[in-house]
Amino acid sequence: MTGHIGVVGRVLTDKAVMLNQRVGRFEDINTDAIIPDYLFQALQAPEIRERLVKLGYGAAQPNISPKLIASVEIPLPPLETQHRIASILGAYDDLIEVNRRRIAVLEEMARGLFEEWFVRFRFPGHEAVPILDTQDGPLPEGWTWGTLADIGQASGKSLNPSAFPDETFAHYSLPAFDGGRSPVADQGSAIKSNKLHFDEPVVLVSKLNPRIPRVWFVPKTTEVRQLASTEFVPIKSNNGLPLAYVFAIVSGEQFRNRLVGMAGGTSTSHQRVKPKDILGTPVALAPRQLVMEAGEHLSPVYRLVVQLEAANRSLAASRDLLLPRLISGQLSVAEAERELEEAA
Image 1 (cartoon, rainbow, N blue to C red):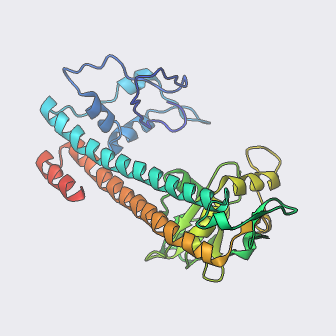
Image 2: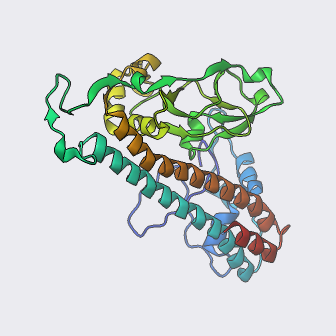
Image 3: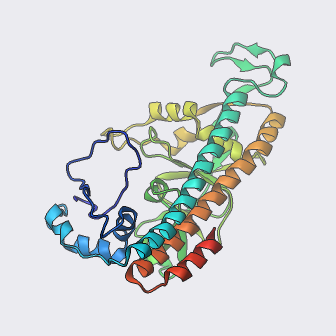
């Protein structure tokens, strides 16, 4: 009810929860008139959200009261139709959630393999390789200490998107990452500052607040030019090494902790690490053959994660197109059910 007015969530647990005092809660819903699942979907319709936003008041930060929320009218089709609408839109949500769970499992698998091989040193054939004490810590024989610059290098050139006002770019920004790791299609006229342009597979590492893990795997270029916020450092792999190996290193807990130790700034909410420090971060360098073998396992996993994220973007787009048309009655439920079958 404050700030981002009208953003809707749903609690799917029987456990006790606590709400901020500026978050409203619907209770004692009259199920003879409206189905809770339909209410959840209807409140997300753009026209309903727009009405809520317009009712907001306050100059510095918009607010809305429970009384004003209660005054907003929403379409009420028959209960059977409400059931079908909620079922259709909920099915899209379910498909997206299934993909999210698959992504979490895949990422955990990749993280487990990397830690097993390159942190615990339990790689294939490790039994025959002695662990040596070095000045910077134990390492298997044949390994060396180096820096991220030994396996990757900074990529990207500064570009002013406003010089191309009618061109559409794939914009990789911190809000886009936080909103589900989905680059935003922005026209050059809408991007007000210089960005980093890259046209090759990269890993994006955030300079801002490294305690928050923001590492983005971008394995291939899109049909449009790609731009990254200058809060990211685009890194490409060196000497034909798998990009997935670079990603696994920079997304690991050890690497992130090193960045946190090097970050500086005037406040804890705006700590930054310098690009040269990111590339100069110490890493254990394994023999090339082992790195390439790891890439054979890691690369397909990360590519599948990217595909599932793209599938979720497509599902979300389809759902967002259907939602207002279903709620307003512009689209028949039967037609929407056919579209859902095709999406599934």
